[in-house]
Figure (tube, rainbow, N blue to C red):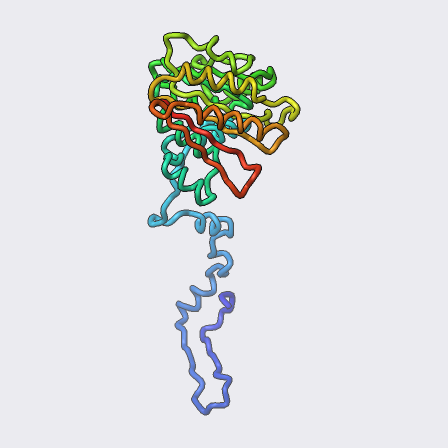
Length: 297
């Protein structure tokens, strides 16, 4: 259109109306100017420039703030730390009353009740005993309950199986720092000998038992009633006033019910004036673990 050198432009009205056809008159100067103007395609900015302009943020547009990513942690260690921290964190874990209510309504496990009661009794700087380390979850939870900047807390861990001690040690090395690791003493020995490893002048706040077989281990290797009874007697002697003996008995395996009978017999024999004995059991779930708690007044 711009290349035309005519002096007049006209447009026809194509409808069948009788309206007169308008005539547009252009001056000679305007026509001459139009004749030398470049085509519209040359007046447009390049497409790349348009794209760059479209990507330029408006002054009112909010520019996302940059948040540095956390330090990279090996996936295995991060997973273990998160899983274990959930067992020991008093801010996110349930209180004892909430855990008991949850157990009654079927929303909490016996293990959660045990850990909640532990947290209500164990204090920073205390000495505690994990009489059956297993894979180290309880050992870790207890360590987080007693450790502080003073370094006075102690966790004495025991298990008759070397593989359990190795698993616990490996777990703790990945889940805690070297300062906390120094607070843990692990022994591959029978839990009936706990008096041999705890200093005589060190009152114990808690002794924890998980009776049965090692999760993921040989199911033929189990705790037995005879040594369990000796271990309970030893625990009652080393636990100080205000302390607790916690016994979680798994009864779904051969011999588990016999061991529970020994634990209940021991609990019922404790004098009522110095001990409080109680039991948490799902009566209509015959193979569910049973929690027995013995509190020394």
